Length: 193
Image (cartoon, rainbow, N blue to C red; front, side):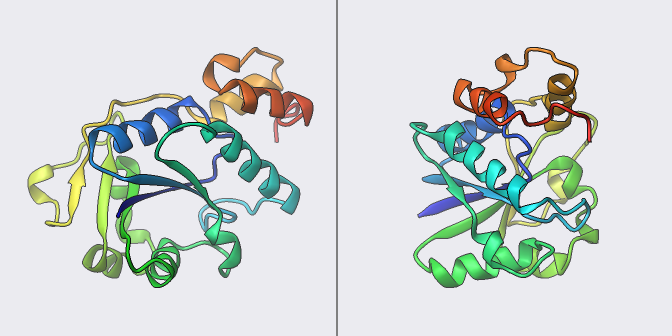
């Protein structure tokens, strides 16, 4: 079963994430896309346990009823910080019937040599790169198991949404209604942090 691993902080998950995941599911042959919530990206600050729970809950709310999308919290059972090589190794051991593809942004591909065991990730896994404005990828130079998605470029960021909420702006057009309601009921992102 062809399964895409789309990891992120999802702080919060927004419509851009859902558009990309749905596009990959519907247009690029994936049978499922697993939105994998990362507890601790090694390049970012660690979240509190309370924020971890909020991020997982928001992903579950956002994808409810959307075909092909699943929430995956496997990284919460792995050592911290979260490294993609550990996630992929663990998932392949747990689900040998699935063919996993790591989904990353073009910005991450341009610095992929800084990732832990990046050569092994490339040698042992399929990788899908989604386009980002200003990040030019030479498709002819990609390894045979790495491809550039034709997904539309979506320029919405979680930082933009958090900033808008902290300023009291109405951000419900950038979030699903259940996620927006969840953020409001838990008073998340009301102060810029």
